[in-house]
Image 1 (cartoon, rainbow, N blue to C red):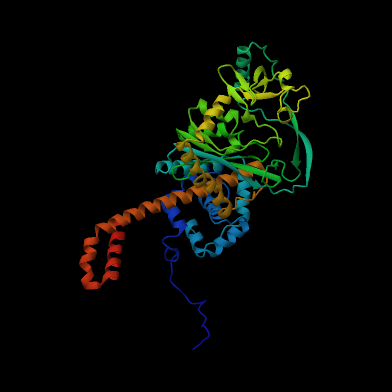
Image 2 (spheres, rainbow, N blue to C red):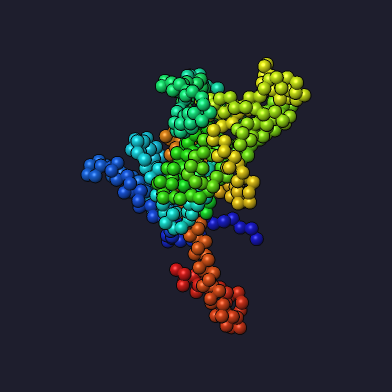
Length: 490
């Protein structure tokens, strides 16, 4: 029989938040795994001790932001509306059912005024990583690094062209020394010193978000983006570093500095690193070899004009310091340029009669030039590891660590788009998103350990379970033993 439901919305019920929040809820696992009270101490100097109106608890404020990133709520106004009606969110924030939810403007004004010039977001991320290290979730032996793009909140058609100073790269001093040593070994004169005035290049600057960079990459969308350069530990995929740059900055530029930063900050002593093909540069390979790291970098087939001989067709002879062309001619060393490349040139008299001249060079003087970097030996050693069995195993873990980390960030934590404008604001977003992903990893690891302990207690009580079979049946006996194991675990 079909009946109309009776109204029950206004009945008085005696309930508590503890009863309403499931015991296996993600927020319960996170609250049990980490202590967030450190936030209050880190920001205490930003508040007045004895004057003004009572401030919103900073722990509550950052916990609310964590909820937004954990559950992919991009809007702070929408976040406050969700906290208003979600009892699990209220429980996590320490709010009662009748407590007023903070206004969205309270969060935004605290971010803009109180925390704008502070390093609290970096400190929160670092402290969570330290807690993961203390719980044994970070091995530090193998680190994987990659970058992903976040679409800037800017119209790609609204820009102006400006001459921008090129950033001096950290390895230029070391490269200059290597070039001078190489030229001296070959009896060449020293090069003139680099110009003190920085070089400039024309770039597209967004009129909406000038800090973003215009990205033009194969297989990637064009427009104004930011890059999140992320490093993930190989043990449990804990994120150990995140660094934000405009999308016009190459992946390899900040890599070595950020690697040194996290090793110094957390006391990590990596043995190997895994990188994709975008990091396969002479400077990166040289830096890894200098640090004694087992670097494995992906391979990208070099582009060449269609129908022309590739560079790999020319064989380098280290004993004679020459290149051998497919027809047997030796290409002799000519010079080393400022960018660190040695030039090896052929004899035009021999090349004029070569049957492969049309597919070898376009030079009007029939001279073939092959270049070799002064750090090419380091590149060759790193590239050779890619084909070894340990190198293959190390590189295969990339898709389970850093690539999976980015996939989760984009799919679950709103990492496809920059929520705010400006490099500092996007850095806050990336730090909080990475911190939330680490929170999930830590909570899940703790839950797995507890479940494993529960199973060990359960197996220890199998004798009791078999003894109860005749009196109460199999299913009830299993339920009684499981409850007993849970009590022993707690």
